[in-house]
Image 1 (cartoon, rainbow, N blue to C red):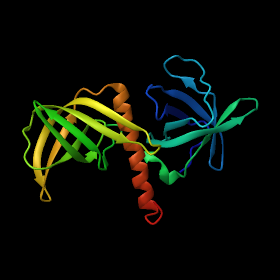
Image 2: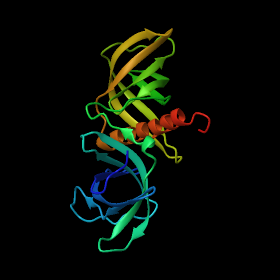
Image 3: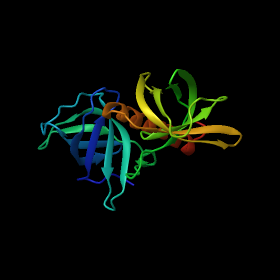
Image 4: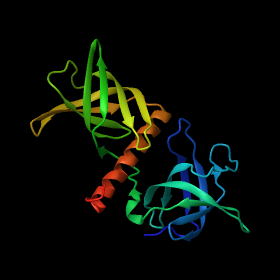
Length: 219
């Protein structure tokens, strides 16, 4: 699958505290380079001048209404009748299909601190999404199904950045699986910035998992 000329892209900066979205259109394509027109900031409606080396999460829709995402980077500019920005385009197998109805859930270990009343726990996830997570319980815990808890989620990104998401949550269910006690947790008070951090983290980990599936001997 290739991105066709005229496809609209939505760009979201990665590794930034500020939540921004830009809209642009693919004007040309050559090898692993996408040439886009100068993007428009979707909030201010003004033209954005992207700096070389800036990294983004790009999303687009195909003609059959499927949505995909990929990581990209500004690698240069091209003069012409239409001034263009050059974006790196990964291989199609690295595109991630987006499930619009629910957040992408990724199986990956993440450190999570839980506070419930006067109790504190250090646990590790089984999986995580921007809407919730599942944790492996170690020993007995004071909280039960339906209890309100506070989480500190540690998100280590590939570039070395570490984000700490602090949010309220609700214990959905505690159950046994494969001789382990699992707690499923729903996030209930995550702000837009923290939610974007989790979405980007899940997307990054999903790309890593995809590469392992494609080439398990070169990870």
